[in-house]
Amino acid sequence: MQVKTGQAGVDELRSLRGLLDHIRADQGLLVAWGGFKGTAKTEAQSEYFKMKLWDANDVLQNLFEAYELISDSVRSELPLQRVWALVSTND
Image 1: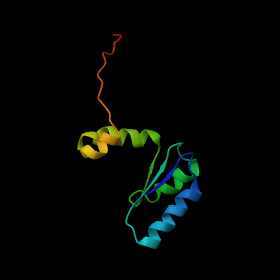
Image 2: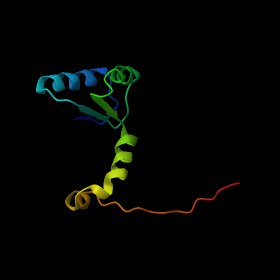
Image 3: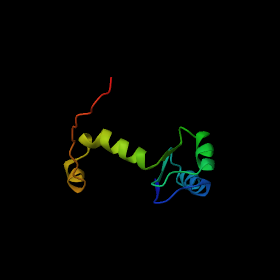
């Protein structure tokens, strides 16, 4: 896994691919909080089952979906609480 705080491009993708090949890993995850440049997205599509790209929305979505499955010790470091709110509907 590689994490970048800004936007990631094809250089970061290729760097991770090289690392995966070097350590003979089956899969890699590139997380870029600022998203990805179009060239990185296009190149990653050809390796869909080997490389995953997550932006900030993907990280949060996966965290919220798996939060209840995370160990208590990890949840104590990231205490979240579900909040329900009424939503008005305009029919």
